[in-house]
Image 1 (cartoon, helix red, strand yellow):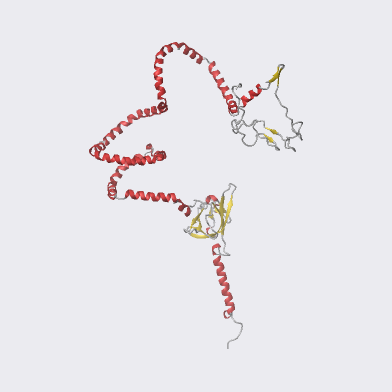
Image 2: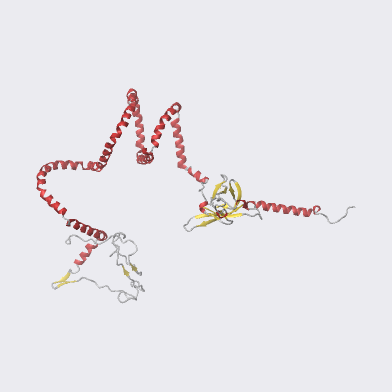
Length: 481
């Protein structure tokens, strides 16, 4: 007979339901955290510096050789002293790849066209054991992969799409239309071109060898073509008209193509062979001619504007040249005297001293030139000096001056002071400008002396803020005007 005792767990529906619920909760928890790594599973944690996170998000895969080896735990921006900002990634990796060699690279790549990204690690090489400690050349747990390992720079899909902007699309459409129009109705011509292509290519080999020779300097051709295209761009319409006119010209030449133009082409190879044989001997003459033309270029350019004057000079100069023979005979003694003077050893010494004097005076003259040319100060100085004693009577003259009463207050200009005058009244403020701007080199183009604005209630020591312009008194040349 069966004993009635304690019921087993399997017979208790409450315990079965609780166990089932617990298993489901644990499964959901593990599934939810699977992207961040399973709990209680050891990981190999590294930090990677990259130039740009490139829309990477937390939980994205870390792959090596296409296999998932970890996840991205956190993404943190890093601001630098030079103003740039990079991203720092904390990676949770499998311990099976530990240690990661220090010459490994990190690259953020797209996983799909929808914007999903992942981190790709290209594993480097550890040194062979025995030659060097392999462990010291791998990243330790918690180490940082430096920014220089984030190579190569990735190209985003949006950058590829942005290449085909509106101008590029319009140009591509125009090219497709024009190439289509160029090839339309020319099937037989294309067939003929393909038929004769082997013969052309066979003859092209020596031409290509000649062009590839460094002495040909083919590398200079395309920069020269680029410069020529930029020069001819403003006359593009004229060139288009040229091709229209060429069509008319070639239509006219079609009537004389046979036998005249054909004979010219047939006789062309012998003429070219003769030219190839004789041109090396003409190279020296052509080089000298080139140099002569280059030397004559400035004179010829000036000759176009000076031709009338030269014609008049020849007309007037012919009689003068006839009389110059007698003059040359009379100048013989003069030139002998000049020759003796030039051979005098004291002349170079004097010229050297004169050159040194001019070099020493040049900076001072450069600084003084704007004082007079821009501000008229030197002329005004002598005018005012001349009028200083212009007042007087029969007994004599006296100086013209006016007494200016100094402001009153502490440290005023009317008595001893321990500091620059600084109030409290608005007129008791020091205003001094010992070196006003006069438009000299390195100074603003202004005539500051006698034009400075008086800033009431402020101390002004040195140049007044702002540009005071170049206004000055006009000194007449004729004082009787």
